[in-house]
Length: 491
Image 1: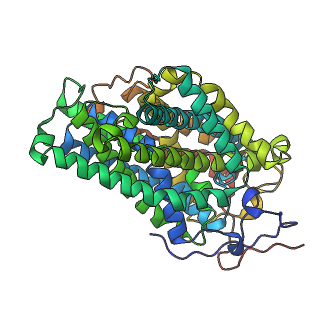
Image 2: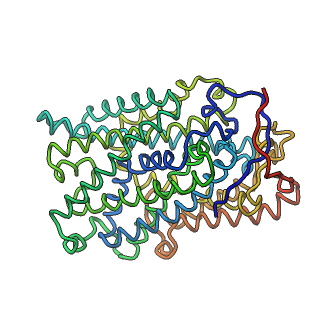
Image 3: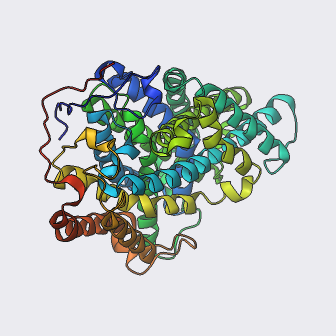
């Protein structure tokens, strides 16, 4: 599926001081990650505390055996789809993923999608991770110094704010800092996960674990199982806003594709399943509350410290992808901002959200749902556009050409077909699973919500492109795109 691919020839005026911080296509020599480095980045990103929280949320609906099945199915489906688009196109051409969206939405349309997703989703994820980090630090301080700090106190918000500021300081140095932190944190996280697993099964047998009922299931067991699968699918889709931007830093499509399975799939599945086991065993859904009861005070505090650094890693990866997106497609204002200031734009809203920890933290499932309602159809549209309609070929020069003359200009920079398809996919999701109340429809137990949404968005985009866009010459689908020459820049 992922073959060795050559890139289209394009000449760009100059080489930036650090090309990884620029919106221009990256040359092969500018790619900084191979297979193993990108794998460690993905593992460090995947085993952040949100994977534990994902598993704890699954424990509400299903027991241990069904949790294993639902997590594997959910993450497997969404990881496959996200690994196809946006990962492969961005890795092939070295193009930032939101710039690549210009082939679908047009220049201005892609900017609207980019600004919305980069600011809202990045801020929300950073806030969730920072608040979880605050919870972990409170537990560590309480255990170490005999304090009685509450996780609803101002201490959590202050600690979370410190985490956001620290993330900004590291991120200001660029993506190499993401790699260096991940190379340290990822192996430690694997050790922590292994230790948790050992301690769980030291105190409980497999038969006893599988006999524990779900914490708060739906009345219909099959509906509960499908909700658990939906959580996995939505959790996998949540990687979409950043995976293409990270993948553009890899040295080949293979180096971009397969680490998604080592990191985003296997590591996330492992962490989520362990999270479910811990939540069922302890009847506690707060991940940072597991470690001291399971590992003891000393080892538990050490494990909490590792988790704290893991959350920093995840914030860095999320922040980097969003910052590159804003710089590349946010217009002249963002393009001219220093890298450190860009970090403030992305992480600034998170610094505000951490002062509302209960509101942010207790709506994790709904946040996943609000992400999937847009990302599921967007993923389907991206796969159809790149692999089916364009057959894996994009004219890179046209991505950077002014709207009036670009093949991807559509209608004054907007592709109405893409937005109609996206809306139909989102509507499909909302009809199957209410994104606010999280109440499933009668059809949901047979379909989930994300997969029909993805399929409807993809099908609508394909049909409307054939009926509307191509007859009008929109979108550059008839362009002859060379595939054998390399990217070059001229001074």
